[in-house]
Length: 291
Ligand code: ASP
Image 1 (tube, rainbow, N blue to C red):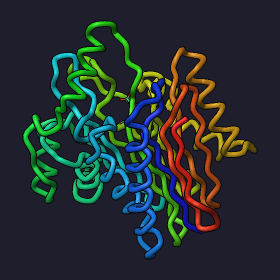
Image 2: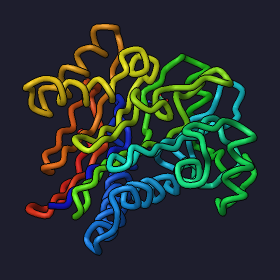
Image 3: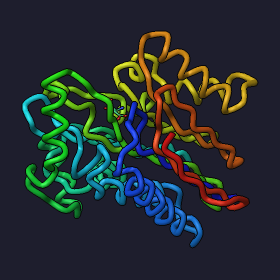
Protein backbone atom coordinates (compact mmCIF):
# COMPACT_ATOMS: atom_id res chain seq x y z
CA UNK A 1 0.00 0.00 0.00
CA UNK A 2 1.18 3.53 -0.77
CA UNK A 3 -0.85 6.61 0.12
CA UNK A 4 -0.61 10.38 0.28
CA UNK A 5 -2.91 13.10 1.65
CA UNK A 6 -2.40 16.82 1.19
CA UNK A 7 -4.02 19.84 2.77
CA UNK A 8 -4.08 23.39 1.48
CA UNK A 9 -5.33 24.91 4.70
CA UNK A 10 -8.49 24.95 6.79
CA UNK A 11 -10.44 28.21 6.83
CA UNK A 12 -13.68 29.97 6.06
CA UNK A 13 -13.19 30.50 2.36
CA UNK A 14 -15.75 32.18 0.18
CA UNK A 15 -16.38 30.47 -3.17
CA UNK A 16 -14.33 32.33 -5.76
CA UNK A 17 -12.92 32.31 -9.25
CA UNK A 18 -9.66 31.10 -7.72
CA UNK A 19 -11.17 27.75 -6.73
CA UNK A 20 -10.30 25.94 -9.94
CA UNK A 21 -6.69 27.07 -9.74
CA UNK A 22 -6.50 25.88 -6.11
CA UNK A 23 -7.92 22.49 -7.09
CA UNK A 24 -5.46 22.28 -9.98
CA UNK A 25 -2.49 23.06 -7.72
CA UNK A 26 -3.62 20.48 -5.16
CA UNK A 27 -3.88 17.92 -7.97
CA UNK A 28 -0.39 18.85 -9.22
CA UNK A 29 1.05 18.52 -5.70
CA UNK A 30 -0.69 15.17 -5.27
CA UNK A 31 0.71 13.92 -8.58
CA UNK A 32 4.21 15.07 -7.69
CA UNK A 33 4.13 13.28 -4.34
CA UNK A 34 2.48 10.24 -5.89
CA UNK A 35 5.22 9.89 -8.53
CA UNK A 36 7.82 9.71 -5.77
CA UNK A 37 5.88 6.97 -3.96
CA UNK A 38 5.04 5.09 -7.15
CA UNK A 39 8.67 4.88 -8.15
CA UNK A 40 9.54 3.38 -4.76
CA UNK A 41 10.70 6.65 -3.20
CA UNK A 42 10.55 7.59 0.47
CA UNK A 43 7.47 9.04 2.17
CA UNK A 44 9.66 11.88 3.43
CA UNK A 45 10.62 12.82 -0.15
CA UNK A 46 7.02 12.58 -1.33
CA UNK A 47 5.87 14.94 1.43
CA UNK A 48 8.65 17.44 0.68
CA UNK A 49 8.02 17.40 -3.07
CA UNK A 50 4.25 17.85 -2.69
CA UNK A 51 4.68 20.76 -0.29
CA UNK A 52 7.27 22.38 -2.58
CA UNK A 53 4.71 22.47 -5.41
CA UNK A 54 2.25 24.34 -3.18
CA UNK A 55 4.92 26.73 -1.84
CA UNK A 56 5.34 27.87 -5.44
CA UNK A 57 1.61 28.63 -5.89
CA UNK A 58 0.85 32.13 -4.54
CA UNK A 59 -2.78 31.24 -3.74
CA UNK A 60 -1.63 29.23 -0.72
CA UNK A 61 -0.31 30.55 2.57
CA UNK A 62 3.17 29.09 2.16
CA UNK A 63 6.22 30.26 0.28
CA UNK A 64 5.37 32.94 -2.30
CA UNK A 65 2.07 34.64 -1.43
CA UNK A 66 2.15 33.59 2.23
CA UNK A 67 0.45 35.54 5.01
CA UNK A 68 2.24 38.70 6.13
CA UNK A 69 3.01 40.00 9.58
CA UNK A 70 1.24 43.11 10.82
CA UNK A 71 4.14 45.22 9.57
CA UNK A 72 4.01 43.66 6.09
CA UNK A 73 7.06 41.44 6.36
CA UNK A 74 7.12 37.70 5.73
CA UNK A 75 8.16 35.11 8.35
CA UNK A 76 7.85 31.56 7.10
CA UNK A 77 7.71 28.36 9.16
CA UNK A 78 8.02 24.75 7.98
CA UNK A 79 8.55 21.28 9.42
CA UNK A 80 9.20 17.72 8.30
CA UNK A 81 8.95 14.55 10.38
CA UNK A 82 10.23 11.14 9.29
CA UNK A 83 8.18 8.52 11.13
CA UNK A 84 10.51 5.64 10.31
CA UNK A 85 13.60 7.13 11.90
CA UNK A 86 12.09 9.67 14.29
CA UNK A 87 14.19 12.38 12.65
CA UNK A 88 12.63 15.83 12.39
CA UNK A 89 13.63 19.22 11.03
CA UNK A 90 11.91 22.58 11.25
CA UNK A 91 12.57 26.23 10.51
CA UNK A 92 10.96 29.29 12.05
CA UNK A 93 10.67 32.83 10.69
CA UNK A 94 12.73 32.42 7.53
CA UNK A 95 12.61 35.17 4.91
CA UNK A 96 15.35 34.37 2.43
CA UNK A 97 14.91 30.74 1.41
CA UNK A 98 12.66 30.06 -1.56
CA UNK A 99 11.36 26.70 -0.31
CA UNK A 100 11.02 26.72 3.49
CA UNK A 101 10.24 22.98 3.39
CA UNK A 102 13.66 22.39 1.80
CA UNK A 103 15.20 24.39 4.65
CA UNK A 104 13.40 22.12 7.13
CA UNK A 105 14.83 19.15 5.23
CA UNK A 106 18.32 20.62 5.49
CA UNK A 107 17.92 20.87 9.27
CA UNK A 108 16.69 17.27 9.39
CA UNK A 109 19.44 15.89 7.15
CA UNK A 110 22.47 17.97 8.00
CA UNK A 111 22.21 19.61 11.41
CA UNK A 112 22.59 18.16 14.88
CA UNK A 113 19.42 20.12 15.80
CA UNK A 114 15.69 19.76 15.23
CA UNK A 115 14.48 23.38 14.95
CA UNK A 116 16.41 26.42 13.70
CA UNK A 117 15.13 29.99 13.51
CA UNK A 118 15.71 33.22 11.60
CA UNK A 119 19.01 34.27 10.17
CA UNK A 120 20.91 31.21 11.41
CA UNK A 121 18.38 28.86 9.82
CA UNK A 122 18.59 30.76 6.53
CA UNK A 123 22.38 30.70 6.42
CA UNK A 124 22.44 27.02 7.30
CA UNK A 125 19.85 26.15 4.64
CA UNK A 126 21.60 28.17 1.92
CA UNK A 127 24.95 26.58 2.83
CA UNK A 128 23.24 23.23 2.28
CA UNK A 129 21.95 24.04 -1.17
CA UNK A 130 18.62 25.82 -0.62
CA UNK A 131 17.73 28.56 -3.14
CA UNK A 132 18.30 32.04 -1.69
CA UNK A 133 15.79 34.81 -2.46
CA UNK A 134 15.16 38.34 -1.23
CA UNK A 135 12.23 38.68 1.22
CA UNK A 136 10.28 40.72 -1.39
CA UNK A 137 10.04 37.58 -3.51
CA UNK A 138 7.32 36.26 -1.18
CA UNK A 139 5.14 39.38 -1.10
CA UNK A 140 2.34 39.53 -3.69
CA UNK A 141 -0.40 42.05 -4.51
CA UNK A 142 -2.86 39.50 -3.20
CA UNK A 143 -1.10 39.08 0.15
CA UNK A 144 -0.81 42.87 0.55
CA UNK A 145 -4.55 43.21 -0.16
CA UNK A 146 -5.34 40.49 2.40
CA UNK A 147 -3.21 42.29 5.00
CA UNK A 148 -5.05 45.53 4.27
CA UNK A 149 -8.40 43.76 4.77
CA UNK A 150 -7.14 42.37 8.04
CA UNK A 151 -5.93 45.80 9.19
CA UNK A 152 -9.25 47.37 8.16
CA UNK A 153 -11.65 44.91 9.78
CA UNK A 154 -9.57 42.25 11.57
CA UNK A 155 -11.07 39.59 9.30
CA UNK A 156 -9.00 36.51 8.68
CA UNK A 157 -11.05 34.22 6.52
CA UNK A 158 -8.32 32.52 4.54
CA UNK A 159 -5.64 30.44 6.15
CA UNK A 160 -4.23 28.26 3.35
CA UNK A 161 -1.21 26.68 5.05
CA UNK A 162 -0.05 23.58 3.19
CA UNK A 163 0.90 20.14 4.44
CA UNK A 164 1.16 16.49 3.50
CA UNK A 165 1.35 13.01 5.00
CA UNK A 166 2.54 9.95 3.10
CA UNK A 167 3.06 6.21 3.40
CA UNK A 168 5.65 4.59 1.13
CA UNK A 169 6.01 1.06 -0.20
CA UNK A 170 8.45 0.21 2.59
CA UNK A 171 5.78 1.09 5.18
CA UNK A 172 7.42 4.35 6.23
CA UNK A 173 5.27 7.34 7.22
CA UNK A 174 6.17 11.03 7.03
CA UNK A 175 4.48 14.38 7.67
CA UNK A 176 5.23 17.98 6.78
CA UNK A 177 3.76 21.49 6.84
CA UNK A 178 4.70 24.92 5.51
CA UNK A 179 3.10 28.28 6.32
CA UNK A 180 3.35 32.02 6.57
CA UNK A 181 1.34 31.75 9.79
CA UNK A 182 -1.79 33.83 10.28
CA UNK A 183 -2.36 37.08 8.39
CA UNK A 184 -1.48 40.13 10.47
CA UNK A 185 0.43 38.14 13.09
CA UNK A 186 2.77 40.07 15.33
CA UNK A 187 6.35 39.90 14.08
CA UNK A 188 8.06 37.04 15.89
CA UNK A 189 4.87 35.02 16.39
CA UNK A 190 5.26 31.25 16.00
CA UNK A 191 2.31 28.92 15.40
CA UNK A 192 1.91 25.15 15.47
CA UNK A 193 3.36 24.35 12.05
CA UNK A 194 7.07 24.15 12.97
CA UNK A 195 6.46 22.76 16.44
CA UNK A 196 6.86 19.00 16.29
CA UNK A 197 3.98 17.39 18.16
CA UNK A 198 1.76 20.44 17.79
CA UNK A 199 1.18 20.95 14.05
CA UNK A 200 3.39 18.23 12.62
CA UNK A 201 4.25 14.71 13.80
CA UNK A 202 5.04 11.23 12.48
CA UNK A 203 6.10 7.93 13.99
CA UNK A 204 5.85 4.35 12.71
CA UNK A 205 2.09 4.23 13.41
CA UNK A 206 0.72 7.55 12.28
CA UNK A 207 1.58 10.76 10.42
CA UNK A 208 -0.28 14.00 11.18
CA UNK A 209 -0.32 17.51 9.66
CA UNK A 210 -2.58 20.14 11.25
CA UNK A 211 -3.90 23.47 9.97
CA UNK A 212 -5.91 26.19 11.66
CA UNK A 213 -5.39 28.75 14.39
CA UNK A 214 -2.03 27.49 15.52
CA UNK A 215 -2.15 28.86 19.04
CA UNK A 216 -4.83 26.30 19.93
CA UNK A 217 -3.02 23.40 18.29
CA UNK A 218 0.09 24.26 20.28
CA UNK A 219 -1.88 24.48 23.53
CA UNK A 220 -3.25 20.96 23.15
CA UNK A 221 -0.19 19.39 21.51
CA UNK A 222 -2.56 18.36 18.74
CA UNK A 223 -0.48 16.14 16.44
CA UNK A 224 1.23 14.19 19.21
CA UNK A 225 -2.06 13.97 21.12
CA UNK A 226 -3.61 12.25 18.13
CA UNK A 227 -0.70 9.82 17.86
CA UNK A 228 -0.94 9.05 21.58
CA UNK A 229 -4.68 8.44 21.39
CA UNK A 230 -4.04 5.92 18.61
CA UNK A 231 -1.12 4.31 20.42
CA UNK A 232 -2.64 4.07 23.87
CA UNK A 233 -6.32 3.69 23.18
CA UNK A 234 -8.54 1.43 21.19
CA UNK A 235 -9.76 4.33 19.10
CA UNK A 236 -9.81 4.40 15.36
CA UNK A 237 -7.72 7.01 13.58
CA UNK A 238 -10.87 8.89 12.69
CA UNK A 239 -12.22 8.92 16.25
CA UNK A 240 -8.84 10.06 17.60
CA UNK A 241 -8.65 12.86 15.01
CA UNK A 242 -12.15 14.06 15.85
CA UNK A 243 -11.34 13.98 19.57
CA UNK A 244 -8.30 16.17 18.98
CA UNK A 245 -10.35 18.68 16.99
CA UNK A 246 -12.99 18.64 19.75
CA UNK A 247 -10.27 19.48 22.26
CA UNK A 248 -9.18 22.39 20.05
CA UNK A 249 -12.81 23.51 19.72
CA UNK A 250 -13.34 23.37 23.48
CA UNK A 251 -10.62 26.02 23.87
CA UNK A 252 -12.22 28.20 21.19
CA UNK A 253 -9.96 27.16 18.30
CA UNK A 254 -10.84 25.97 14.81
CA UNK A 255 -9.03 24.17 12.06
CA UNK A 256 -8.45 20.76 10.56
CA UNK A 257 -5.91 18.03 10.10
CA UNK A 258 -4.88 15.17 7.87
CA UNK A 259 -3.76 11.89 9.43
CA UNK A 260 -2.59 8.66 7.86
CA UNK A 261 -1.64 5.35 9.47
CA UNK A 262 0.64 2.50 8.49
CA UNK A 263 -2.26 0.53 6.95
CA UNK A 264 -3.04 3.42 4.61
CA UNK A 265 -6.16 4.43 6.54
CA UNK A 266 -6.57 8.20 6.47
CA UNK A 267 -8.87 10.87 7.84
CA UNK A 268 -9.19 14.58 7.07
CA UNK A 269 -11.62 16.24 9.52
CA UNK A 270 -12.05 20.01 9.86
CA UNK A 271 -14.16 22.32 11.98
CA UNK A 272 -13.94 25.32 9.63
CA UNK A 273 -16.26 25.70 6.66
CA UNK A 274 -13.61 24.56 4.21
CA UNK A 275 -10.32 22.70 4.01
CA UNK A 276 -8.52 22.31 0.72
CA UNK A 277 -7.40 18.69 0.49
CA UNK A 278 -6.39 15.92 -1.84
CA UNK A 279 -5.74 12.22 -1.37
CA UNK A 280 -4.70 9.07 -3.18
CA UNK A 281 -4.15 5.43 -2.22
CA UNK A 282 -2.87 2.57 -4.34
CA UNK A 283 -6.27 0.86 -4.16
CA UNK A 284 -8.38 3.86 -5.13
CA UNK A 285 -8.84 6.90 -7.29
CA UNK A 286 -7.33 10.28 -6.44
CA UNK A 287 -9.64 12.85 -4.87
CA UNK A 288 -9.53 16.60 -4.38
CA UNK A 289 -11.99 18.80 -2.43
CA UNK A 290 -12.32 22.28 -1.00
CA UNK A 291 -15.50 22.14 1.08
N1 ASP B 1 -1.58 26.69 11.62
C1 ASP B 1 -1.00 27.82 10.94
C2 ASP B 1 -0.45 28.76 11.98
O1 ASP B 1 -1.10 28.97 12.98
C3 ASP B 1 -1.97 28.54 10.06
C4 ASP B 1 -2.75 27.67 9.12
O2 ASP B 1 -2.92 26.50 9.31
O3 ASP B 1 -3.21 28.19 8.10
O4 ASP B 1 0.58 29.32 11.77
